[in-house]
Image (cartoon, rainbow, N blue to C red; front, side, top):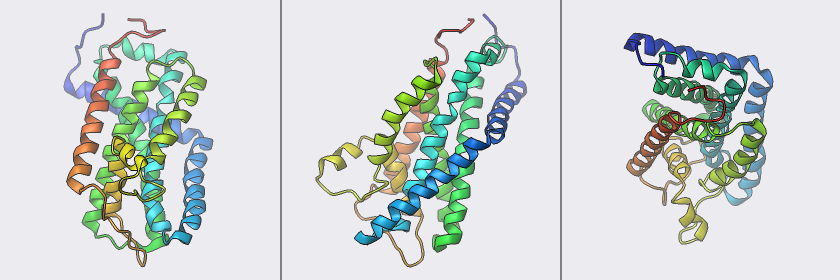
Length: 263
């Protein structure tokens, strides 16, 4: 069993290297970059066009699109765990002197920053196209909320991918898991008080991230009512608790043995 003989500086270097590796790998796969940007824009345009008939539109759907970018990009970024295990890279990291939590933090940080890069680009595009009326402080708080969501969702993806041995199986589980999580977050339609779907959405942590973004992001000539949404305090409490819980669980599961684990 390898022992932790690294200094904090060395551990930080390990985390930074793994994080950088995830980002470089992403940008080298141009099909991932194009697909990750085109799909949210397509959903945003198609759904918001339909929502305009119900006095809803781009401004309402925009926070949900940001959540979709974070959700799908962050979780699918953790497919690299399966690929790294198959290629032998993960085993090399696991037998190194670096503690496993450093590997967990590095992989999650890399996936989260990939999601954030795309979400920030989409936020800028929305700002230019729709005219954001939120104050700079509100935008900063929205970005911080997005960062918390990205860490939480990447940690969730890590938790699931760690036990998987094929990318096909990961895709199958995620396709069934991700869409309900997104659809039940209030991204598409406003919650109806008393409806059973609304009650179910209260147990979905992504609901509170989307609600937090709706509180912070407002656009010219298309104000979206925040009545009926959870308060900002509740949104932050649930989102941070979700991120912390997923991060701890990811660290715990990384300490268990899996197929192909050399330890």
